[in-house]
Image (cartoon, rainbow, N blue to C red; front, top):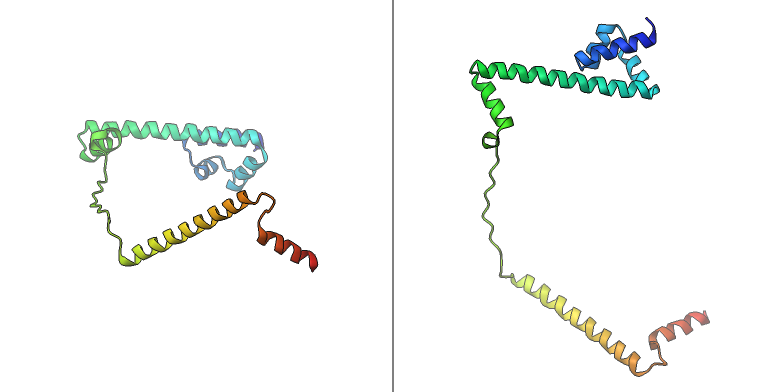
Length: 156
């Protein structure tokens, strides 16, 4: 069978039953050939995706039709399925209940950590403020420690 004809027949089968292996068996084509065609031929790749999509739509329509027939026959499972998937009131829900209590009191260890952090923060702030004031009072000096380290590095 010619390759182009095999491709056309394969895509026709895929539109009827969107399962690649089944379509391959109906046409007598190896699955590996179909995947090779898909990888080598962009047009075939697009046709393959369209055929799969059309086949899935057909199966969905058939399934929905069968489900409606079962509902008409008063099948409880079919009725339940339809309602759970199509009606907001009957959807399966998960209810989460929680009792959240906030802890307003710190443990003694936590209090100590907070005090230490605040102390270090205020020491750092005071040091920064002192440096800024010193710099403002002595505009010609841009930090004595930096000057010393620069001169030392120049002597090495």
